[in-house]
Amino acid sequence: MAVPKRRKSDRSGRPKIYSPGRPPVAQKAHYRKFWNAIDRGLTSDEASRHAGISPAVGARLFRHNGGMKRKIESARSKRYLSFPEREEIAILHEQEISVRDIALKLRRSPSTVSRELRRNAATRSGDLKYRAHTAQWHADRRSRRPKLAKLNLNSRLRDYVEDRLSGKVKTINGRNLGPETTWIDRNQGRRKDRRWAKSWSPEQISNRLRIDYPQDESMRISPEAIYQSLYIQGRGNLKRELVACLRTGRALRIPRERSRRGSAFVNKEILISERPAEVEDRAIPGHWEGDLILGAGSSAIGTLVERTTRFTILLHLPRMENYGAPRNKRSPPLAGHGAEAVRKAIAASIIKLPKHLKRSLTWDQGTEMAQHEELRVQVNLPIYFCDPQFPWQRGTNENTNGLLRQYFPKGTDLSRHSKLDLDSVAATLNSRPRKTLEWKTPSEAFNDLLKSRRKHNVATTG
Image: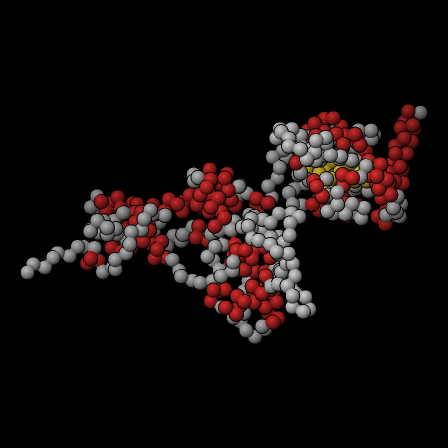
């Protein structure tokens, strides 16, 4: 009886493996471009177009990883063969060039090329056919490490983390407190009930473990490991819904560079770094800082503070007609603090001031200042913008807004206050003595500036 001839793939000494499907080499190149674009602050749609993948794939990739870049996207060590090298091996091997000549051209060891041709060859055709894509798939599959997350291996540590993160708020009698909420896999949004839990931060959990278990080294975990277990699917044993117990309640992590992106109407020439140096020491008056304080129902009040005297002006921003009714997308916002309304309010408050008291205005990068160019021309006032997420660059205004919250608390409807109300509150605040003004009031310091300027003008003309 004739013995059937064995295929070369059967004699390779390698167990049978299933079809690899589409090789992930091209995907990795696209994903690497995608995450590099995310690191630069682009949105998932913009990063998808930059990487050459569909927006749906980019959004799914971003959500699957919780907004966090995967470590497998990092560049592979030069110790291992790269995909271009495998393509070169496939071409030269198909031309029947010897292993030693291939190794000489690639500047690799002949044993490396020989082992590559033997171990990573394709076998579906019944022959040991070397293809670069399949070889790269074999190498990637072999390089995977089945390392489990620490929370998967240590159930006691996992229970501790879950209890401090999502433990129920209870009464003395042990009754659970808090509203009933559902996880929607999205940010919960403002002014909605949130889950009542112990809500320890990952940093608090990590550092408290050293106090509660000083001798047990197995009860240790870093804050970043907890965050990854929450945000990256399959990374840990914590449920994604537990992100609702974090202080931010954010369903996805926001890349740092994306949070620093400024508004489209702000360019480098009008950033705070270009502001004159004389503004910093407050010796020269006429430099203002401005912002909005927001209330319930999209209500707002504008604030202007002079840096030298701390003199405060409040901007009345009433709601426009037909507020609450459906509006055309191209029509101005009806809440009262749109770009046009804010521009008119600032111009009406500052245009009457003398020239030496309107040297500059510093604002944050809110959309309410989208018409800053028109305001600059109308009032003849240079305008500068703070860096994103840097409110301390308007420290005088931020401090004043905190004082104003005594009269306009958060969560209240600010549209109910009339212009007379705002003028009265501003007068009250300006009549408070300030330690930084040697116990003068802002009104007295501001009036002194006006009087000194008038005397100077009279002496010059006389």
